[in-house]
Length: 363
Ligand code: SAH
Image 1 (cartoon, rainbow, N blue to C red):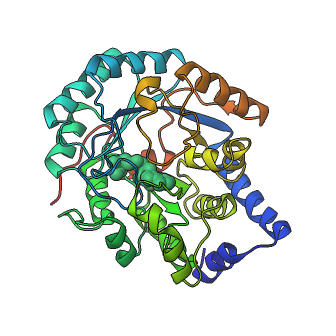
Image 2 (cartoon, rainbow, N blue to C red; image 1 turned 45 degrees about the vertical axis):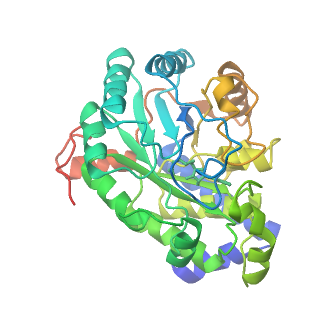
């Protein structure tokens, strides 16, 4: 899709014309990845974080947060629950926590792989190439790291003291080269973001040829600098994007059109701003994945990246039941198996390599 068309859709406000975009995205989703909705069980394994991201409630300076780190046995118990609920993948997410030591995570991955048939996805923030290679060799299948925004000025502003490795886009290229099925994404409506920025973000999704694309609305957290400076920031930006469900769905739908084979989740943030219909809206406008939460309730309430998070007060069993019934009510089916990205599988075939074989690392 050419840039003027992307921008025209991002700026489109007429609900009737937007119906065309939703339909195109839904048809493309059906033709390329089918009607099955893949479920990925999410375990938030640690909320310790050394970073100061301007938007995130887990940032190091937020003293209100009661910090936790789960044990191997607690995480394995969640993995066995995931198998029981018929999920094909375990996603382990955390703040950027150096306390998650390289070998500790590698041993955890080996145990998960030995004890369950689950695909293992890591979402542990920016880590060294050595860590990423060690975890790939231990058996991790996928890595998720949203680049949040491709606008370098905005990126640097909301990621103070940035990583030595530069923008996350460079790190994502290394993650792919190491052989991970690679996911990324952005927040929609970050103060300071414009439609032009979102068009760039979408072009980056296609250029990076991502296997998974997660898009959710930005939700202000009062315990963060961005949450506190929100209004001033927005007012200063001409063409500021709204952090609402329509803009989020436009980006998801366009991501589907531009990367038709990608796995695209209907995100928890979308369900947070519209608890009644957010999940369904995403699934009808391009998404084919949902990530039900498996984190034990006592930890779950402490993983507050933004306030009012959907499902924060539910149990894993409630999330499993709720999500299944929502999928079935849409006339869709729950996917079986790991739900690997067709994009990743075809790329692996083209290179004559098996997806499970890590490629030599680049630095
Ligand atoms: N430490 C990991 C995981 C972060 S949480 C990492 O940095 O990759 C996962 C995602 O939640 C982030 O990538 C971000 O896009 C989203 N997120 C964080 N704070 C948010 C907020 N206030 N509103 C909406 N989404 C947020």
